Image 1 (spheres, helix red, strand yellow):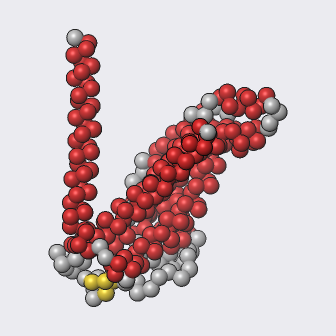
Image 2 (image 1 turned 120 degrees about the horizontal axis):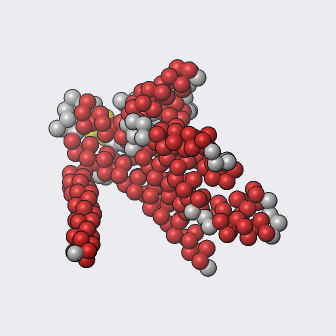
Image 3 (image 1 turned 45 degrees about the vertical axis):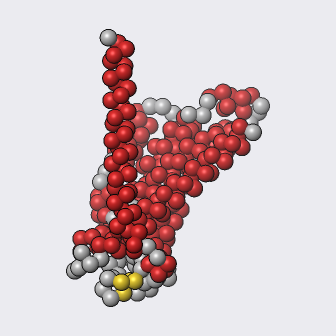
Length: 282
C-alpha cells in the first residue's frame, strides 16, 4: 500500500511538472511564431514612427537597460549588505524575527503599491520628477526584499566549519566573511540577485507612474529624463494603441525581445555560477 502511494505521488508530481513545462513551451511557441516576422535589424535599432505602427524599439531597449542598471546599482549593495548583517552579525531575537518577517511580507507586496510609493517618495518628495532615476530607485525598492532573502539563505547554507576553521587560524570576523563565507555563498547570491533584477526588468506598474513615457523621439540624456521601456511599450501596443490589430505583430516582437533580454541575464548568471563552482572544485 505504501509503495502504491509513493508511485501515485511520484507520477502526480511528474504530471504537474510536465503540465507546467508544457504551458511554458506553448506560450513561448506562440510568441515565437507571431513575433519572429517582426524581428529585424531595423526593428531592434530604429525609433518608432507613424504612430508606432512602423519602425523599431531602440529607445525602449535602451531605456530598459538604463533603468535596470540603476536598479542593480541601488539594490544589490544594500541587499547583500543587509543579508550579511542579518546572517552574520545580528543576534537572534524578536527584533530580527520581526525584520525577517517584514522583508518576506514586502517581497509579496503588489508592484503597483511600490509604484505609488515611488511617486510619493522619489517623484514628489525628493523632486526627482518622472525620470529614469525615480523608476530605477522604485524598482530597487521592489527588488530589495527578494535580494535580502535569497542572499541570507545563501549565506546560511555555507557550513559553519568554514567559519570555525578561519577563526582557528586567527582571522577576524570580517576577514572570515570576506575570504570564506562570501566566496562560498556567491553563486547563490548571484542567482537570487539576477532573478530579482530580471523580475524588475519586466515590471510595468512601478515605472508607469515614475518615469516611463508613451513615446519619446530621443534617448534619455541624463538620469532625470523620462524614458521608454520594453514592458510599458508592450503594454501600450497591446492595450492602448489606436490600431491594436495592426501593431499586434510588433507587440509580439517586443515581447520576444523582452523575454530574450531576461533569458540573457539568467544565462549570464548560470555561466558565472558554473565557472565559480568549477574553480572551487579545482
